[in-house]
Length: 176
Ligand code: IMP
Ligand code: MG
Image (cartoon, rainbow, N blue to C red):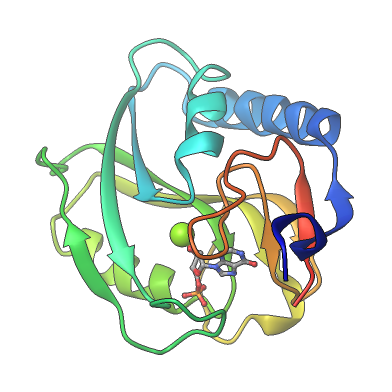
């Protein structure tokens, strides 16, 4: 299948994303008033969302990244989570906000939460751009959700399929 035909129906437009990111930024700014937030982005998918989100929250916020792998090259969760890159900074006593691109089974997130909690941050919350509603299998508490979507595979705005389509400005279904 060529690249063009892999990109399916438009699900969330550039404008819808921008508006929602601004709203979430306002919610976060209000909730964390007067505190410095440590954003922990989950590579690689979340880097586009995180870059936009960072510019909607107050000065004094810092960023770091973790890279985890849960899927390999498939589009189904394997159940195996590996840390490929750990944080560079100590998060003890910090207000940490995990920034995710999409929560599907919640497996990656559950692992991350357990791992980061053991480092004793002052607070630990989660912000995800997308949340696959019906696929939610694990009980994880997510404070900020951009869009709830059907359990279908999507690409664009940082989300990839075999490392492709991260550059799309809007979010599309993937034709498989
Ligand atoms: P989970 O562990 O099943 O919640 O999967 C979470 C991770 O799988 C995300 O952080 C993404 O990297 C990847 N993922 C899940 N669904 C999609 C999708 O629709 N498009 C691209 N990547 C996805
Ligand atoms: Mg991810």
